[in-house]
Length: 252
Image (cartoon, rainbow, N blue to C red):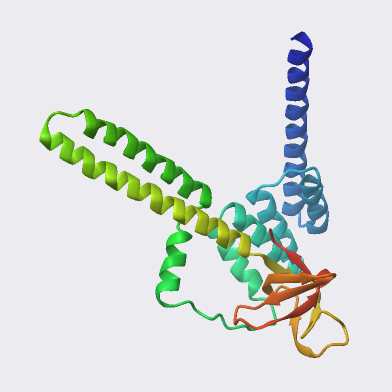
């Protein structure tokens, strides 16, 4: 028991020291950034990432430092990473838009329309975890109100309890379906940023195949398949092709 308690205390102390050290490095990196020493700040920010820590603020600052050095692909990459952790942050979205203006490739987005768009908007309204939480709450409402309906003696109370319990059951079923759909969409979503200054997109995963077009650094693509050291990517206009895996970096 004493050994276990000692291990817990030691682990807590190590965690506190580690957190303090990381915070100190983060503040030092911010100071370097404020002194316009962007390359040094990037190295220090990356050292924090290498230690296993990440945050939207850390990725955002990395994006800012790279943007100051006109590093197109890294700035967009880190802004996108920050947006994954803080998807509603307007400052991240604004800076990402500025960085995307530096890219060369002009790719039209194919808009989703009709029922598919409505469904996707509903599914993406919450995370899979949030939908799951709502489903659990719906089940809880159903069980409590159904029991109330079963034991209530007044007809009005029974009617109200029954109706609300059915609503709770509907919420539980609907939210469960949404949670599974959101998880499916998240697994399918595999965005990446082109890091090569110029990447030749091929019709097949080999260097001797036909060249379809070229992509330039900073362009965002979706990785939809892989083969050996090649990625099959899809652009916003639904164009597809194969690129060497070293030319792009996946965001997730």
